[in-house]
Image 1 (cartoon, one colour):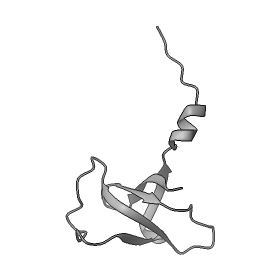
Image 2 (cartoon, rainbow, N blue to C red):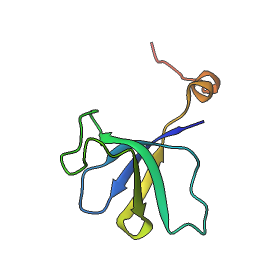
Image 3 (tube, rainbow, N blue to C red):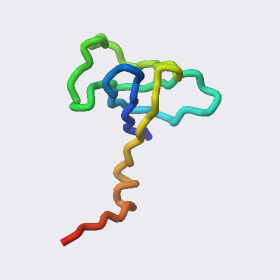
Image 4 (cartoon, rainbow, N blue to C red):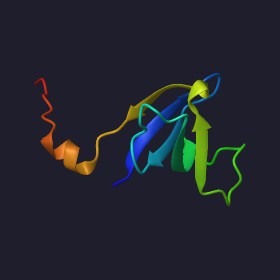
Length: 81
């Protein structure tokens, strides 16, 4: 199952992508697919034909992981009237 993530790269705008598996503590880089801007537009510095991307850990500030559809069903949201 692919995880949708928002990758915060140092000195750059965040990149929205999918990761097949979460990185392990011993990894030196992350691998993702379908990299795009936060608004869904194509990134100007990535070739249109490229499919998989590798980013070294030293360039990443942090990664946000979005909940899957299964996780969303389990999350309780509270609304104020």
